Length: 223
Length: 223
Image (cartoon, rainbow over all chains, first blue to last red; front, side, top):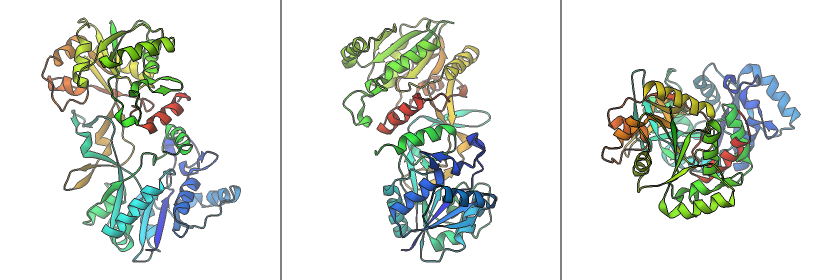
């Protein structure tokens, strides 16, 4: 099945205490998002790669591609005001009867095994969402009180979130809601039943300075 | 207020794929739990340190202290079959009108700011439990289904969990329940109201091989 990887590079970098958009911050000497793209391309060089960026970063990205002699073919799509609109824009040009893997640009250490698991399951079931377990005690909090909850009943959700294209294109025809935090929630609001598959621990999301340190150490090991 | 740090070194190491109990695994060349003890001692050399270990590891620990020329004074207490009984044993010798900080031995990178925050708040309120935010989407799962939940409403709970001694000693007089995952849950079952205070991101719990890699990288930076 023809596969598209949609790599979202939409962040503004506020939490990174950096003026560079976070997806362009160097990780082992190269912008984070280049590692992410290379990872998908290494997994399957036939995969079509779509990179979604805010329009104001188009020129910076082109300059970076030249500077780093970055040769992996990809399409650039203009991001929207919210993640929802960025994904919606990227889906427009994707044909039916294909598979779409939607991935955070700031998750460069995604394992090939995870990509393979989500792809296989989405071919079978129409969608697949990677998760990992929570390793510590958690509590539910509100303004008034807090209480312990069973950690086994909660999972951390990662990307890539994989869907058959006609299913996710249909879901993104619905109205935007503030409660949409990822593609799974958009799909679910359209009546879909989310299929969870195991992700991988190294597939961290780089949003804070500490994550960059962790990512550099994780990239140096095979585990 | 006289302060006791109870450092729990009770794990059996199953998840670390290692035959050494996880608290004794070397981190930057020295057993994890030694870093933890040093950290509390550096924060306040007057703090009384109690280390809880399974009886079968007493000799190993003594040998390690000699090998690493480990000179920080501490009391060794015999651990129980469950974390609950280990803490209960450690509380027996602690006098009333003091403060108890109960900490996982495998969290060596606790910041002095976090120790200070929990200590101050527990002096004011009787208890203090450190938390950090969750940075990714989370879902609640059951055998039948899964649904998204608001990540802002959930917090990851860390240690040290701090209590006035008479309060936590009273709570540990209650019967053991399987639902007790930490001291906050024991305290709460006794009618206590949990006070959350901010923990710190570097205060990770080392339970898997990947955590050890992350810990080594985090120890090398000040952030």
